[in-house]
Length: 305
Image (cartoon, helix red, strand yellow):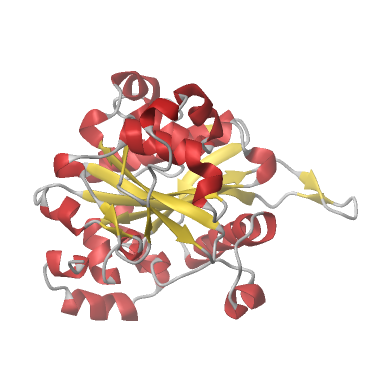
């Protein structure tokens, strides 16, 4: 596999500054975006602007990935109760905040807003400082990047929503934020890992086979799972796949990507730490369905605050 970092220009001086800078400074190039980015009722969407904001997003990720789902935390994650890695400092983090007061376990009213949804965004120039994209650990995206030398790549990842908030409002706010971010930074191609829960690909033969036969990225958009980790997705022949049943078996996030026009890479990767089987999502901005652009607004104004 080609080293993705070799596709970026050298950033040695910038990397030294990044390592020395306080976390708040890492977000200064996103100030052209309004704050908040959007609002629906008591839910507010914005970009994390401080280290404290990022920590709150990491705590939400820990709660969803490690407490609710089957991910296995490291000793550090268990101690801090935060899902974090080396990429977080180079990313922008969309967060959905609920401002509604609520009762705690002791019946006391709590008015402090809480983070209930998050999405992690890593632009190509920021990935250069981080040593590459997180996705490259599972999928060989170097040919995809090399095939589009003038395009601006945006990695989407670490998305999660607190269980009581997994509804249309929260998801719409997050997609509204991604669209506003794409417009503000001129991103051309979005990609990232998306997960099906479980580590036995044969148990998810129907949805994986459907993705392979009906949504496989080819030509200039093609990318494969890395050697040694790749598991085949075409477990069933195409004539044995019921597309409607397969769509029902897919996680909502992947269904959402497909409705926008996304394609998937060749092969899946089993992530034993997170208890998931991952597929690569490739979503060129140019193929996004016009009805979705109309829905969120050509200037991302549907849920503007």
